[in-house]
Length: 296
Image (cartoon, rainbow, N blue to C red; front, top):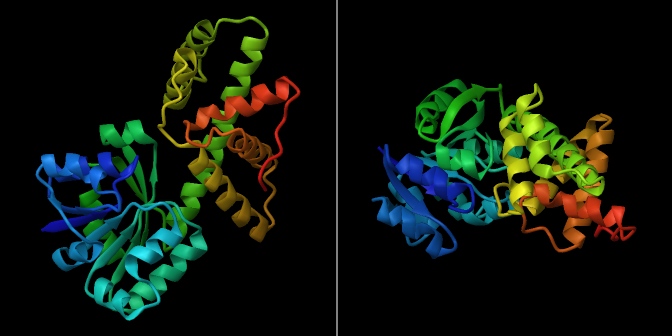
């Protein structure tokens, strides 16, 4: 069976490469240069997104947001039904849960099947094939798609009906965002008090608070390497989604609110393209009495 993969960005490219080692992949991306490693790995490179749907019964979408998904699927046009009818559409990117629920309705109405499967993890787990999939949808399509995720994910969880997968993803990301913000604040505090970040890293690694996240992010701070694993601007987008869902349900998120403001400030300072631990720049600016005005 040929499997489609649309969206080969920071996360999508390594995911698609891992998938291509196990099944026949037909891939498409707006920026063709992102497809070259897939072509080298033996995947079929489609000229247009429509060609992926023509060739495949299951199409995985790893796209930035709902607007991009709508554009790729030509949602709201007659072409949408032609693309999705008889196909299983798997949404793996992060969008608002309400958006995903609406997309499921439209896909099913057009004769397609829909599975939600956002993933927890950043670029390194994507490279390693150790992401965690958070699936949602009807049992039939979920059962069809689940084995296809194994080359990309060390575990898959079925969270319930759509949009339970995305709601779970936002809950997980709330924890991740506040965790990394706290870690960045710890590093800023330590440096301002003359401590060696490498020793701080070793202390944390030796204790019960050590995790893949703390090890990975502190290693980046020690090395001064803020190359992207999870892009700061994308994480800020996640804070927007989490905050909107929380406000709609009347859920208090005081830690998220503080973290979100810091991510907005880091973006205003021009650091949106760095890894998320680059939020330390916003903390440093505050320490220097130069807190920027966030853009929202």
